[in-house]
Structure formats: structure tokens, C-alpha cells
Image (cartoon, rainbow, N blue to C red; front, side, top):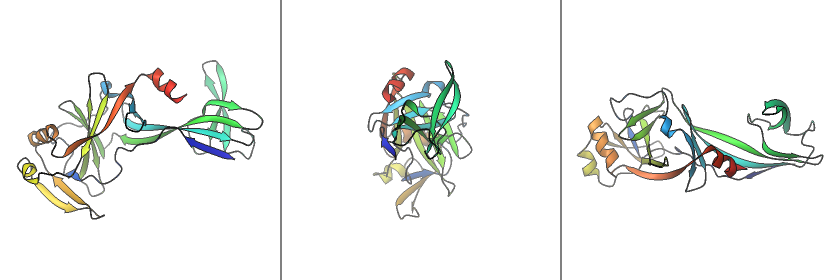
Length: 235
């Protein structure tokens, strides 16, 4: 019997319709970048739910660790686990894989009765491309997601001096008059019947929105983790 035990909960950056969307990637007129800036790249621990956020040149993904117990013969023909010989630091090493996953199990223990190990699962949240664009503006890496209707959802990553990250996402505006004084606003309903606002701000107007709390709110704080600290955290 194969058993899974989730060790680290998984959080999602963009899990539902944003209450505020934009007609174009933000800020308007700024160039889209082909990679995340080096200062942002690294591994981070979410203080809210202990999920792990990883920023590479082209991607943002989250990692979750699952404790795997195979109570049958871990290398038998009927097991969901299989083994491959991979080159390691000390030559060829036997590594174990779970069917359907590309990463090998870590920290494995194998006996005739069972195999125990940790499976690292990666969930890609953002990949730079035509429909997922990143722009740098006023100290923020802006994550622009294009939705199926052609409009754009925007999240913002801000970095502290100690390399920690703060994540901001949009919220329902409480002061519509103040918002309309900055940029044109179109109120509408999503397919699920949820209230949503479509904005078309200039670059200067978006700067005001980013500095205010009219539409953006902090939704996550991520502590920078050196590589060795991340390895110790998992195993």
C-alpha cells in the first residue's frame, strides 16, 4: 500500500477571479522583461502557511514535500515506484521515482518490506511569456496574467532590504469616487456573478494606485531562505 503524507501545505498566487482587472499589462508603456531580476531570484518561506516559493529566471513555482511510504517491496514489479541509475556526486546512484513524477524521492530508506522517502512536488505558478508578463516599476516586479477574456490580472512583488518579499493583489475598491478621480473605471460582473472593476490607467495613474491602498492589499510575506536552510527545512 502506497501512502502519502503532506508535510508542507501548498499556496496559490492566483486562485480565483481578481476583483480588479486591467485592459493592458501594467504599467502601460513599460517594457516587459524576459527574466526576473537577480535580486528576486531565490527560495522563500511563506510566513502565513509555511509554503515554499521559488523564483527563477523565468518561473515562479511552489514546492510541497510529501512523505511516501510503500509498504510493498519498494522495487518490485507491482509497485507504483520505479528505480533508475543516475549520476551523482560519487558515481552512479540508484534513485527511486513515483509514477507520473519527474523528480526522484529524497532521503530514502529501502528494505525488503517497504520504501520510505520524501517526494518534492513542484507547482508552476508563473512562466514568463506572451500571456504572463513581468514588468519592473517603482521597486516592484509586476506579475501580469492575461485572462481568457483578454483582460489582465496584476499582482505585485516588493522586496525588503533583507531580500524578503511582500506580495500584493487587488481587492474590491471601497472608495469608488477616489478611484474614478485617478483612472476610468468600468463596473461589471464576472461569469460567476462576482463584482469586478475594469481599469485603464495611464502610467502616472498606475503609480498612484500602486502607492495607495485603493485597490492593492498585502496578501503574503515570504522570508528569503539560503539554499542550505531550504535543504534543512525539507529533510
